[in-house]
Structures are given as structure tokens and as C-alpha cells.
Image (cartoon, rainbow, N blue to C red; front, side, top):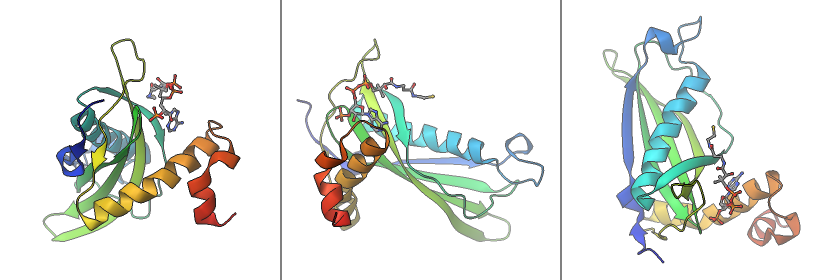
Length: 171
Ligand SMILES: CC(C)(COP(=O)(O)OP(=O)(O)OC[C@H]1O[C@@H](n2cnc3c(N)ncnc32)[C@H](O)[C@@H]1OP(=O)(O)O)[C@@H](O)C(=O)NCCC(=O)NCCS
């Protein structure tokens, strides 16, 4: 069993500038391009935690509340919230910044799940997460019900077995 690691050890901050090739015809960042940036930042956080090759297993719902404009600076902060056997949940937050105008807005957040794999692509055990701050502890606890929800939706868990989720939903 690998040694547990602190949640803070996986913190990854990635910054990108929105260039013409990243935008739609309204000169806003394409949603798919943002998901690509987010996937990379989240994968780096999962690699830092596991010291392994990781693959994206799932992405929870992502809403695009604010357009991100051409020339904006996009900053992503990703961190592993909890690890299970071979999978890790990563929380990622995104901000867009117009530096000349001095405006910075929070635009997105999402939970990604990565699985650590060996050279043949087989899932491999990862270290447990040690949450330290109140925020890390909250996300660590709630990660279990999010895992159950995504596994139920993926048809990988019987809803009857999703005890944490059922207790939360009171069903
Ligand atoms: C993710 C993958 C490695 C899982 O392999 P598998 O043979 O189904 O392995 P298992 O059933 O043993 O599951 C391994 C882990 O993946 C998790 N997992 C599998 N599907 C999942 C999903 N849809 N959502 C969240 N977690 C999932 C399982 O819960 C398990 O986690 P745990 O070990 O922490 O309990 C495999 O499906 C895969 O390689 N997928 C393609 C990944 C990829 O190419 N991503 C990029 C897409 S473009």
C-alpha cells in the first residue's frame, strides 16, 4: 500500500492565454478547448498524487456560466480531493482575467476522475489522501457520495449499494 500523501502536494496551477485559434465565431473560448485545458491541469494533479500514468475515467457536469474572451488569461487550480483504490477525484476551479482592465471572474469548476494505470493500462493502487484544511476535509468527505453518484450513472454501481448517496438524498 503506497504511503498516504497530503492533499496539498497535488495542487497544480496552470495558466493559458486565449488565442484566436481557441475561439468560436463570437471570439469566445470554445467549451471543448476549455475542457482540454482543464483535463491537462487535472491530470497533472492526479500524476503528482500518484506518481503514475493516469487516464481520465469521467468528468462530472460542467456548466459554462461566463464567456471567456479572446486575449483573456485563463487560470486553473486543480487538486486531488480523495483517492480510492486506483481512482482519484480531482477538483478544478477556473478563473478568467482581463489583465489590462483589472477584471478577474470565476468561470467554472468541475470534478474529474482519473485512474492510475501501469504500462499495460491496468489500474494500479494509489496513495490515500490526507486532507488538512477545512475545505480539503469537506471535499474529502463529500467525495464518497459523488463517487457513488457517478458510478451509479455509469451503470457501474447498483443504486441499492450507494449508501452514502442515499443517506444524503434521504431515499
Ligand atoms: C478507466 C479504466 C482504466 C477503468 O478500467 P476498468 O477495467 O473498468 O477497471 P476497474 O473496473 O477495475 O475500475 C478501476 C477504477 O476506475 C473507476 N472507474 C471506472 N469507470 C469509471 C467512471 N465512469 N467514473 C468514475 N470512475 C470510474 C472504478 O471505480 C475503479 O476505481 P477504484 O479502483 O478506485 O475503485 C478504463 O475504463 C480505461 O482505460 N478507460 C479509457 C480511459 C481513457 O482513455 N481516457 C481518455 C478518454 S479520451
